Length: 320
Image (cartoon, rainbow, N blue to C red; front, side):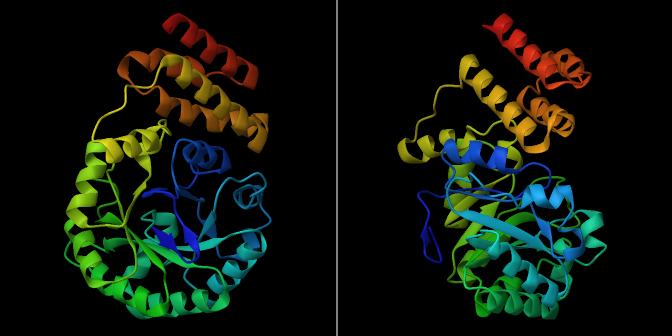
């Protein structure tokens, strides 16, 4: 799949997820085969760019591969300025968020709330595309609510405005993450535009990846929650798409190495205090089975990086 001048090595993209797809997680997914990893969304409001959270999200030093940065907002001028700023910081691609269903984002009429106003969508897209010389992509949902799925309309506007690639989550804003993603709207969008379309939503196995590609005709897949605690899902899907066969499950020693590396990267990125707290949710995703409940409870009580590291080591020593 081609995004502007960038030829991706395969059809798998890491979805931007606030509080998840930081540099540590993106690099892990890229190493396991993802062709592109989109950063956590950054507000277009310059007043927050100086915060620790924003500075950490803007960090690209040591970043692997093509750098795609997602921006969110509802003011065309601020969005254009945010795009310029992030290109200056090293972004190769600017991605526009019109898919986030979170209340705190939507109450500012940003994220998927924008799908209610096609005219404003057009103004924002034209402003951002005109502001930068790098490719601009867009992420949307199928619509605002099930009764108003206007994904095809928004997709046509995006193509007309110069958006080079469109990712579509198979739910409306009203659906949040409930129920199941539907792929009929994504299929219809693919049939109505000539730019690459990326299918997103509930892709959590190699078999599901194959089905969604075949059913929608999408050019690529975007994987979010399916990669939480499982960055190796990209390797599994790639192998299945290429061979039709499933890889053997990841071995305990490899999982231990991945987890410990991930924890160390979190400590480096956020410092020990915040890193320890970010580590809790990631370990909860890595070890999310019922029989691992006690381990998760014990892990969440720990307050230092050394304690967390030691407990993970002990867990896998016993497992092996």
